[in-house]
Amino acid sequence: MKRIAASILLLFALPLMAQPVSINSLRLWSAPGHIRLVLDTSAPAKHTLFSLSNPPRLVLDVEQAVLREALPELKGKNQVIKGLRSAKKKDGSLRVVLDLIREVKPKSFMLNPNSEYGHRLVIDLDDAEQPAAEQAQKTVASVKESNDREIIVAVDAGHGGDDPGAKGRGGTYEKDVVLAIAKKLAGRIDREKGMKAVLVRRGDYYIGLRKRMMLAREQQADLFVSLHADAFRDPRVGGSSVYTLSRRGASSEAARWLAERENSADLVGGVSLEDKDELLASVLLDLSQTGTQEASDQVAHHLLRRLERIGKTHKGRVQQAGFMVLKSPDIPSVLVELAYISNPVEEKKLRNHQHQDQMADAILVGIKDYFTQNPPPGTLLAKLAPEPRGHVISRGETLGLIAQQYQVSLNSLRSANNLSSDRIRVGQVLQIPET
Ligand SMILES: [Zn+2]
Image (tube, rainbow, N blue to C red; front, side):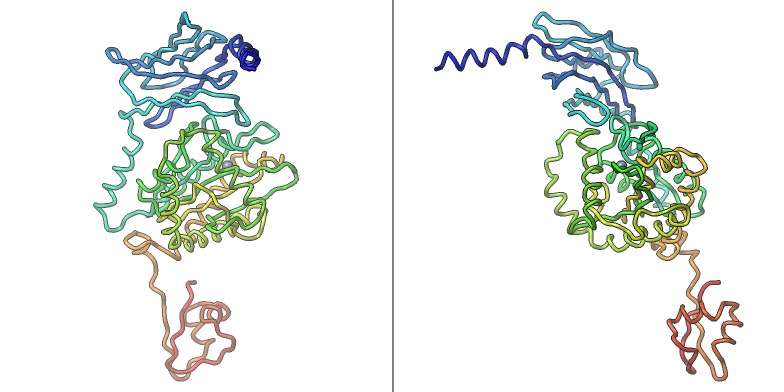
């Protein structure tokens, strides 16, 4: 009996040993303070990674592996890796040596296949010389110097790097169009008096969902706007949607599916599961979320109204789902699915520069709508906001005369004061609407 088991094991083991893992290609994603090297492998690869100094280098040993082709030249700017070389070891493993410009903190893990790539061996290098928080410190410093601080809007382009997001039939990647629109939006925000944008992702690289929120908090953002493009199997489905976080559950089945897909970015785009306090953190976040929920809903409402003016919306109301990236406890956060990239007409629009401008304009105006009505205390906008005007009615005045006096329409005067008739009384205070 034992012998049979042993030979069965051997049978299964043989093909595995005969088939080394092949390393097919290599990509390098460069982010501020972070470099990611991705090796495409034919199967999950067992590997070890260690550092050596003088000169600084990283050594990657991959068990039973072969290189399909010679290691490519490193393209593009990168201030960490000087060169790559490889050698075959006697035990059948492959050694890849990364010659470094300076010492870095390395991390490695395997990623499962996604829509775009197969199995991947990822090496993440944290480059302390390029801290991502560098810019954050500058912002905080300038905030402290001034009482009339700027409103800070964190603009987050979804996905990036090895995580392309959804893909259009014409070959458009969600990660590319949302970055283009995010940059346009950030530029517009920066040109507004009293407002400043922070681009969470600046190039083609992946940032973990929790890290995106962290970057917004480091920058003391007043608002977090995450930009995405939707996809569905039916190419006729279209329209833009605006979401806020739901703590109870998704507002529809489709919303739940969407949130699951967007959240899985961390699995496919890849972060290692090192966040052990994840559960505790999410409980704490949910507890303190309540205060920002209402603000998020208001922003979302304004954005949807503005997006309606430039195209159709998928549903006429703000939707809710459990998006990981919206779970900031203290920053109002919304997620915009700009259009359906799976709809060929909308895919073209997403690529079109003029339409990108229109979308960025609509979102900017929606954001301004919200902050004009709710300027955060201590900001320039709060200081510039007009005092609400009131009028105390004296004897002989009529609603029509008061409307004339302030040059507002009778209807706007009625609605600003929730009047169902034109009867007013002496001593009553009327709110005068802005003209
Ligand atoms: Zn997305």
